[in-house]
Image (cartoon, rainbow, N blue to C red; front, side, top):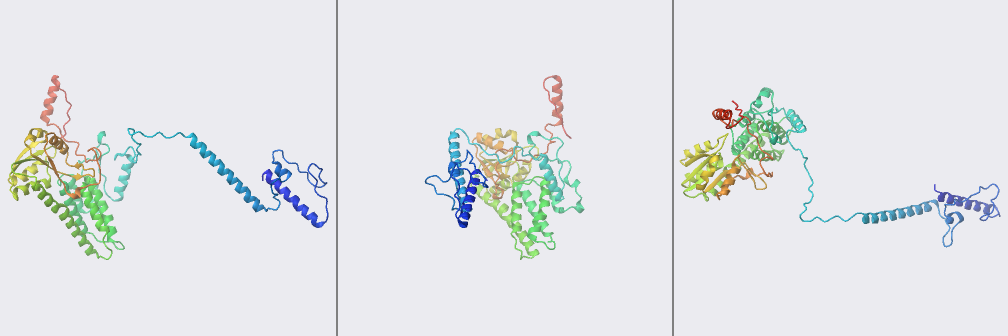
Length: 466
């Protein structure tokens, strides 16, 4: 207890003693201030630091506190402490506002600070990311594809898979959970037998139809949940064979949504038939009918005696040109531009010549020579990003830039199922890397340059791979 409380308790004890004495009989009054105390009573000396009002009794204008109970006194003390605390906090707040200087206003030239939402190092070669991927594939019983021994630092944030060893060497086919049709499709993807966004998506959905036909629901399981779980290792295996395209990713999302929306009242055979018909409708609406609509719209852009430049091998562009020539009877000429190492333009050349279209075949380094006679440029698309950028085969950006320099209009043919919510500003953020061991020079040119280097006219170090 504090000194004030001790003094207050002593006063209360004195008053209680007075009451007892008055009840027993007349007794001598307590000694006045400064008088000697009676024998047997303790002498009370007020502390000099204590308040005189508490030591000597109530001052003028104040009521004595002898009639109040302990609870009332305690409540008064608590209220007084809370009032003092509130005053102290108010003073501190006033002092803090006066001490803190005013924040300087940002001028229009000063950009506001941007909060970083991603870590600085987001790379697939991060050891933590590699361990996480390895655990996921091990849980799904999918082999991990080996990467190159030496990586390119500029592309260290991208997957650099080695295609020398097929993924099936690490698999035990009889004991694997991967469907044989999915294994065959993955090998066709990795070896480049099936190329193009539309062809890869069609092949994927056809394999999924076969997988659904061979599927049987385990006991005590629901088809809408178990089938989605069974698809995950197959998708991971295909992604290890070759990264999924945007069209394949959108098709997989659509199929998972349709499976999860199946009612529980459907029997297994009815649900499987419904899923197969849903896949057929998706192929018909998103690819076949979309190609017909784009082809009809492109008819209006193609005139007689036009010179149209195409690049690579786009199934949609090839169909548009063939329909314009066969159905509408338009007379035009096509310049097919090709590039290494895949040389996909040769397949475009075969298809167009088979339909009787007059074609010219050039490499990509000759586009500046042929563009003065070109009237239109038709290009295919791998995906259309959310910011309006078009993702396509490597070299498409160069053709678009040179066409802009020559003031030649560029038309891009793209279906809506290739639209993507992703945003990219360049081709280094996210991309698919090709084979590293591609010979850049024929052996004859390498030996010639080496001989020139020995004579002192030129120097070149060339490593050719067999």
